[in-house]
Image (tube, helix red, strand yellow):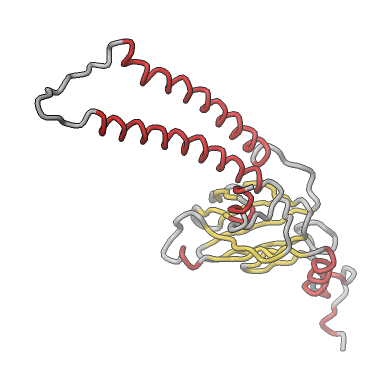
Length: 240
C-alpha cells in the first residue's frame, strides 16, 4: 500500500508501467534490506571492537570456520536474491521488449537535432498515404489502444524517452527501430531525448497527448487535409 502511495508522485500512463515500477521496488527492497543489515553489522563491530587501553589489536586472517561464515552465509543468500531479480527482470524485458502485441495503429517518430516529427496515420489507419498527419513535437494517441512505433533518426544518436510510459529506446541513424506501447491514462505527458545529441539537447522537448476515443476522432478530423480526403485527380484549390 505504501508503494502505491509513493507511485502516485510519478504518473504511470502505460500498460506496462506498473511492471517496470514493481521491478524497481523489488530491487530497492532487496538491496535496501541488505544495505541496512550490512551497515548495522559494520557499525556494531566498530563499537564492539573499539580501541581499549591495555588491549592489543588482533590480526584476523578470515581463515577460521567461524570467521568465514560472515562471508559465506550472506553470499548464499545474495545468490538466491540475484536469481529472483534476474527472473523478475527477464519477465519485464519479455513483456516490454520481446513481445509485440497486435497493433491498433502505427506511428512514426522521426528525430533530428533538435526536434521531433510525429507521423500519425490518417482516417484510413495506414502510414505513407495521402491522409497522414505530420506534427512537430506533439504525438497524439488514443487511450487504451495499442500502438506500434517506428523510430528513425535524420542525423545522430537520440533516445525516445516517455517517463510516464516507463519507455526509453535509443534511435540509431540508418535504422528503423520498432516497439510498442498502450496508453492507459488521458492527459499530456513529457517526451524527452535521453541521449546527449548536441548543444540543443536540453531544449529538445515534446509531448504525448493521450485522448479519449471521441477526442482523438475529432483531432484526426480537424487535422486531416481536405486534399487528402478528395478522390484522386481532384484539385480542391480551385473550389470557392
